[in-house]
Amino acid sequence: MTAVSTDNSVFSEIEKLLIRENVVSEQDISKAKSETLAFNKKSMMPLGLILAKENGLGEAEVAKILNNPSLYEKSAEIIKKDISLKTTDISQMIKKNDSAARLLTELAQKNIISANKKNALLNKILNLKITATTLADMGLVPEDALEAAFRKKKKKMSLCEILYEQHLVTLSELNHIFITLDSSLKLGKILENLGLINDKILDETLKEQSKSGMSLGAILVNKNKISVQQLYFALSIQYNIPFRQLSNFTYSDAQKIELRTIIDRKSAEQNLIIPVLLSGENLMLGVYNPCQIADINDIMSKYGNLKISCVLITHNKFEQLYALLYGEILNTTNNLIAKGPAFYEKKTLISDPDSQYRIINDLYEKYIRLGKDKKGSTFNPDRVTFHDFIKENYLSICSKYNCNHVSFWFNASNENINIMASPVLSKS
Image (cartoon, rainbow, N blue to C red; front, side, top):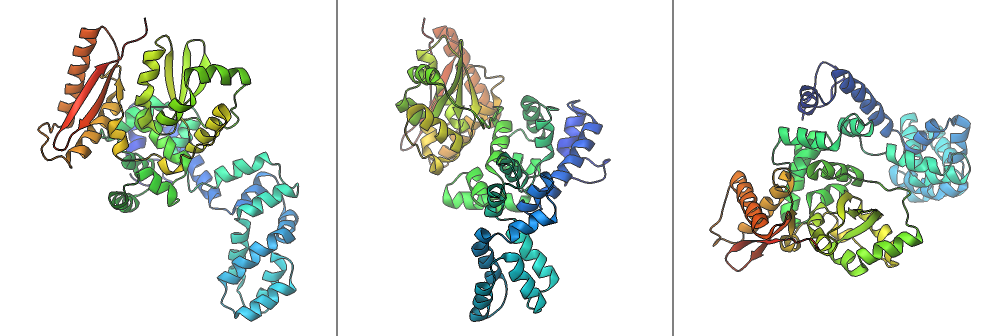
């Protein structure tokens, strides 16, 4: 993807498509670019300075935090590690002082560090998470300002994120644009086209993925190349499923009882789905891995009167809601957007093959990956043929069983991969 330019006459491929498809105007793009650049510039600032700027703190208040004794031990550790000085000498100076500001001033006065080095070390200290929380503990910033500052401290924010947050583009529009740009809709290319990673990072991550078996998204998050929220934003584009933060969401006691009768604890744990909201006949399910969406088959067959929709939530939010609803702890960290044979056994629900391109494409990718290990497999289609095959079988089964939902899955033997299908019959 072409790098974002300050010259508003230059547009990336994504931006050109957004304009050409009349999703947004050139003026919208130019304004969003300016906001993206401003956001990303601010994200480079130390966390403490972001809080100071956002909350109108001056030099005196910043000095207070640098002189706070509760921060001194961690500050001294950073300073000691960063400068070249005999252990005994620096230990004595650390012992003599009681604040980061005074220690750095003494080091500068003795020409042990330059003015630039002093400022660099100050920024390191101001960037500590403990610095931000200490500012709140001292009453210099409100508690709710911390989350906003942590968000602004992300690596960077893409133009599409800005447009989406400003409600200038919808998720379906972004999904359409990214399909137009690259019909494979692979997660790595989406992240690259968003401008969140580059070719080098993607190539390195794909190599690591082939060795470790971990998912690409989990590797990028673990290496701090993207945030968890950015991973889920890309997944929401890939699968055309909305991502929800659910920051202040909780259940009432009545909701807990009602939702547990629909999805019991065992079903939630096995399928990694959780009921979020029931409103009349509409049931919203939360999933942290979009591959789990196929597992609503059983629910639909038991509760045919319900209209089920899904939203993506982070694995941390999933664990939190699981604990609130079922009163138990479920650790999902090791299964963060997992990749592996377990998903090949899951059933994929098809209700409209013409509009579910992404889901069928994902099924195709799984089939191809399985086929690499099954040399005896006789069915080795291209993407279009596979899609037509699924659609023809879907129509045939729906006609025969008078249904409108069909589940597909793979049955892998030692030599062959069989594509299985069965109707999902609603309760009469």
